Length: 263
Image (cartoon, rainbow, N blue to C red; front, side):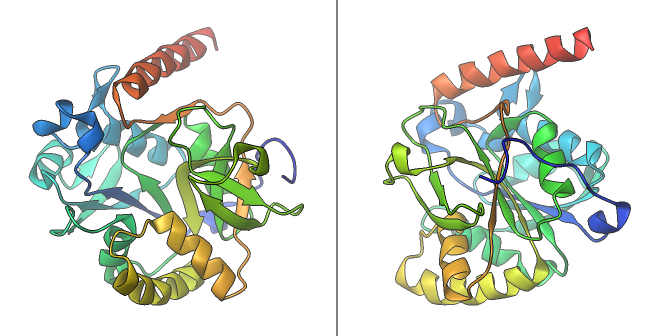
């Protein structure tokens, strides 16, 4: 996997023009009844909505512009975060077809607003600041963050070659073939994004529910692009799909708080 931790070698120039795109349009069906009244991104961990945690982590890595793609109960996200939150300026994109389209469609909706490299995040993540730092400070222009598989039963497994280049991904891949689990944080160059959006126009016709990660893998193969699998050893993170994940996220928050207190 090209080493067992991220290498922090950034310069200020590497972050110039970097914006975040956060996909926050989904219904969050598996988190009902919590998501009957709010979208997943507003579920609170340690008393603070998930999206606020993510924005705070972005700001710590000097990513100060974000596009949030909203859909289900998106007005609540707008009310909570406003046009700026946790030091990050926010632009909103509306995905009105959130109930019958997948995450690639949400990213596709943002294409006219993206004119630079992006840091792509899912809205249902809780993670330590190191996750964003590793992604933004890597010299690789295109990467997906990879961590040890958590055993949740819903992992997107990542397969890479000996040079840590993405070769395949998916939930149906055997754990023994994988180098780890997709975290849900990726860095994509503007050049790659143009090809990703071209791929999306084709693939969305075939499958409107295609995920962004599937489209990334397809684009990498179609255009012979290197997408680096950046493995971060011991990363504290979870995505939140069910009540068990909620409990895990609160435990992680307590562990991170303790770590800060001890430092």
